[in-house]
Image (cartoon, rainbow, N blue to C red):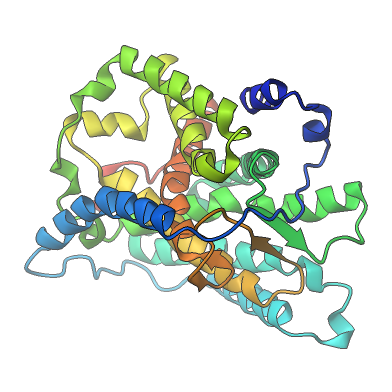
Length: 357
C-alpha cells in the first residue's frame, strides 16, 4: 500500500488524492499504439508460456483417465445455473422493468459461476468448497473484497481501466456496489483451479519439470522483495512503460513476505520441479478473465481499458496482450488463497494430490 506512494513523492505530487476512499479512476489517454512495444511484450509472453504448453502437450497419456464422474450433478448446482443465466440475461438486455437493478448484474453472474464450478467439482470428486469447506469459502469472499480493492488502489497509479455508468452513485453507494462483485474474484479463481486439478491432462508432465532449487534461498527472496518494492515505487513515474509491474510486483512481494516469514508457498514447489499448481492457477485466472471480459462487454455498467502502446486487437474490451496479466494474477490469487487457509486454520481439502487419487 505504501510503496507506490514513494513515486508520487519523488514526482513532487500530493499523495492525498491517492488515499481517497473508495479509490476511483477516470479515463486517461496514454498515447498511440507502438508495434515495437507490442512485439516485445508478445515475445516475452510467448517465451514464458511456450515451454509449459509444450511439456503438457508432449506428456499427454495414451488413454484418457480424466473422464471420471463420481457423483450426479447436485441439486444445489442448479441454483448456480439459474443465478448465472438470470444475471447474464439482465446484463445484456435493457428491459424497462429492470432499470433499477441492471447495474447489479455482475454479482449474481459470478455467484452463479462459483456455485456451478463447485457443483462440477462435486461431480468429479464427491466434495466441494460449498459442501466440505464452507468456512474457507466464506473467508475467501471476505478477503477477496479487500484484495480487489487493493488493485483498484493500484490502478490510480497507472490508469489502465475505468468504469462507465456509475457516475450517479455517491462514494458510499459506489463502495457498496463494487464490494459485492469484488468479493467473488478469489472464490471464482480458486474454485476453477481446484476443478482443473481434477483433470490430469491439463498439467501432464509438470509435476517433474525443471527443478528450480534457487527458490529455497532466502537471499533470493530478499532480492525479489526489493525488486517488487522498487518497481512499484517507480511505476507512477513511468506508467506508460512500467504498467505490467502492477501485476508482477505484488506477486513478488507477497511471495517473498510469506517465504521469509517461514511458510512455504506454491512457488516453493518449483524447487523440486513441480510447476503443476503455478500453471493451473495461471490457466484458472485466464479462464475467469475470459468470462469477466465477455460478461462485461454488453453490460450497462462496465469497465473499459486504456492501456499504453498495446491497445489494439481487442477481445471484448480487453487488448489481446492484456490477457497476459491474468497469468501472474492467478498465481497471486493462489498465494492469497492458500495463506488464508493457513492463518485461519480452515480446511482446504483440495490442495493436495490425494484429491486426484
